[in-house]
Length: 585
Ligand code: DGT
Ligand code: ZN
Image 1 (cartoon, rainbow, N blue to C red):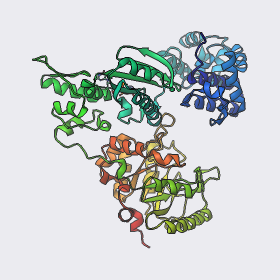
Image 2 (image 1 turned 60 degrees about the vertical axis):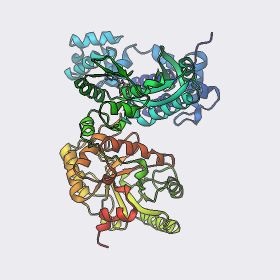
Image 3 (image 1 turned 90 degrees about the vertical axis):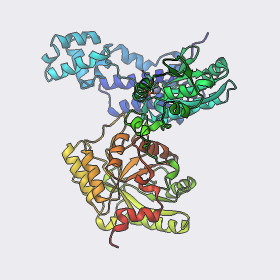
Image 4 (image 1 turned 30 degrees about the horizontal axis):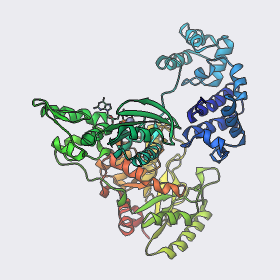
């Protein structure tokens, strides 16, 4: 029998290794980066890379040119990449693992192996324990400690499994649900776990199904085009990995206890533990199959999750709140917040066009916003200091304002097109446009795009100075974090929130799945302090206009009601709320 084609993850690993070995050998940076970028694309592609390669469609992927496509083809047909094989054979087997350790890097790893004449990771560990690494010039106890720490937990320096962004996890989950819904043996199915709770990242995708025919349901699940490999298979649970390596776990039950299963598998663990402890006091034992009355032994179950909560004396709790952060106490007191809904959002205050780094024209972005049913859209291209010559200088901004007014006039009164900007907050807290220019804009978003690593005190001072400006209406992606890639800027968030309240500046909740900034926890802090939020898409393309639900769900996770969100208002109401409406004209 022919062996199954290599998974996307396995292919990506080869390219990751290629990049790492080239870096270890001191190759030029752009080659290293090209392989890394390709590796990331190949890993995250939802379709099978093997199939794309067979169909000659690989070069349609971003970052995959002919050279990479040829190497993928070579790997799939011969089982290896000759260039990689050569690199592997002339480097010590442990070098890449050591280089990947936090605080080590390629140059140090190369020196350790060469100068101490080592071969394996075990050799390096031994050398570190014996204190021999600090004998190399320029390397000290710090490097030794980094190596020992890195090798301590995994043993081989392997990175922990990455978590998927909510966007990728949900897209995969929806694909799986579509396959299941097409199956006669499936009565109902839903997403559960962190994906249902809209946690910002997920370890895996949990899916639950009420089934009349387990075998047919399992068949429909494993036959999905998204499946790279079936990982485990039991009577009522089955797990498969997708082409990008994400594991999807399906649990199946008869319809009668579907509500109990959904409740249990939605979690979070903290929520369930608290729920169960409260139930025990009522002599009830909660599990995924039902609620047992401990004394009578009677088991109650339901197909409806809301009835499960009702049976425990509680109102249904939205999944976004189920993090063990006081939601059960609130539910008991009848004090659950009425949360903002996607349909409450009436316009987008942060949208880019191809005047700066957006991919689509102003006209296309307007069309997309109108297509979503928005009442208004604020055009916010970058200011010059964002770099790469992408930002609008004063002259270009004037020209854009003119174009926005002209186009806006043809859309009024059904749709209000607003002239805005995303102005950079410079290192000292001043803004990248003059007050005179800012005064001509309808809504101004101000953001930090550089100098992320200032001290917390300086960063806080910088941001607060921008909030003081009478022209700044919204603080864009307040912490600057990129999930999994860049930590939030050190900021005294309580001080920033207090300043936002004092100055009447809205804090953005970016719907970009890799930002979700403010985070859920910071959203809650802001809302409780009485701050106003702006849930924006920061769209750089037509497709990104549809990111809005991620921002809204993230805000819901921070217990946000519609009144706390500026853009749940009509433009006239919003205008009088913002600083722009209070500026002297
Ligand atoms: P993840 O996968 O790390 O993104 O987060 P979850 O919440 O999806 O966690 P997962 O996949 O380990 O488990 C799915 C749900 O199953 C979880 O949200 C609640 C439930 N669960 C898992 N383990 C436990 C447990 O030890 N106790 C309780 N009460 N529930 C659990
Ligand atoms: Zn999960």
